[in-house]
Image (tube, rainbow, N blue to C red; front, side):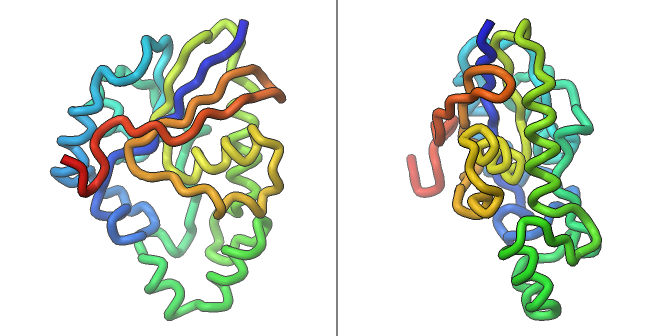
Length: 194
C-alpha cells in the first residue's frame, strides 16, 4: 500500500515572524485564527502526528487534529542559539552562523546539524508502516525541508533552498526510499490575502 503523508508547517508565531530559533512561544492570535480556518482543509487522514513544539501542537489542535507527539519529529536542536534571532547570532557569531548555513555537517551552536536533521527525518519517514495509508504530520519548517530534500534525493546542501511558508502543506506519496513530492498547498489565506 502507498503511504500518503501530508506535512503541515505550523501557523504563525512571534518566533517565526522574528526569524527566531524556536523558544517555545505559542501561536500568535493571527496564527491561531488561520489554523482554525484551515480546519477541515486536509483530505481525510488516518493517524496524525506532531512535532513536540508548542506551535506545532497548537496548530494541530486548532485544525481539529488529534495528533500524537512524536519525539522523532522534534525541532532542530539549535543549542545555545535557542530563542535568539538570526540577526542576533549573526552579529555575535558571524563565522559560526556562516559555517552552519554553508556546511550541512556543521553544528557550531552545540546542537544538531542540518545533516543530522535530514537523517532523523528520513529515518522517521522510512519507519512509517505502509499500512498507515493516509496520515498527516504537523511539523517544524526545517523538518518539512529535510523531508523534501531526502524524498527528492537532493544533497543536504539543498536544505536552505526550500522555503516553507507557515500553514502550508507538502504531500509525500510512496514508501520508504521512493517518495513523490507535491509542494506548497496553502491551508489558509496567506499574509495580505483577504
